Length: 312
Image (cartoon, rainbow, N blue to C red; front, side):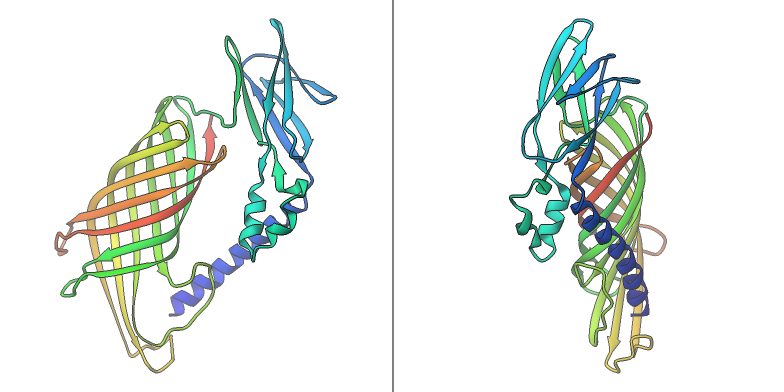
C-alpha cells in the first residue's frame, strides 16, 4: 500500500501539471500553422504572403470555424487548397472535465487549424493533415497504457483476472521503408483501482497485478492505421494482500509471485494528429523461463501514444 501511495502522489503532481497546461491552452486564441511544400513557393493565407524557407512557411492564425484557403504560387502557376478547421483537443479535454466543455461549444475556441499542413506541389496538387515518414526516419515512441486487463496464473493458484488503470511505455520506431518500421519498446502496466491517480487505502483481502515487458514488433502503415506484430519478454507480478488492521504499511499477510515468460506482441493504432495516436495492445505470454511453468497469461491495454521525430 505504501507503493500505491507513493505512485499516486507522483502521478498526481504530473497530472496537475498537465491539467494546468490544458487550461492555459483553452485561453489561447491563435494557432501557429506551418505550411510544408515539396518545392519552393510563395504561400498566401488571407492578406499575408510568405516565401518558403527549406520548403516551409509559418503562419499565426486566428482560430475559427471557417475553412481556410491556402494559395501557393509556383514557377508553374498559382494553385489553392482549402484546409478545414477541426475541434481542438483541449475542447475534448474540457468536455471530459465535469462536462464544462459544453460552455464553449459555439465559441471559436472550440475550433483550431492543423499545426502542420503538407502540400504536394509536384504533378498533383493536394494537401494532407499529416507528415508521412520516410525510409531512415527515427521516432521516439512514448505511450500511456490507460486501461489494462490482466490474466495470470500464479504458482499453486487458480487463474486470476483483473482490470485497472495506468501505465507507461517508451521505445523507438525505425522506418526501413516508406510504410514499414521496426519498433523496440519497454513498458509497465498496473491494475490501479481508480481511472485517475489518487491515494487510497483498502481493507480486507485483495489482489494486485503488475507487468513489465520488453517488445520488438514489425509494423505496417495503412493510411491512418498502423498494425504491428512481434515478440515480447515479460515479468508478470501477482500480489496477494490480507489487511484487516487498517495499517497499509504493515499488512497481516502479503505474498508476491512472479512469472517470467516469453510470448507475442500485437498492436494497432489510429493516428489522430502528426504525433498523437490511440490504439490497443495485446500481449499474450506462454513460454515460461527459469522455474516458471509454461502457461497462458495476457495483458490487453487501451493505449495513448505520442510519436516524436528524432531523425528526419
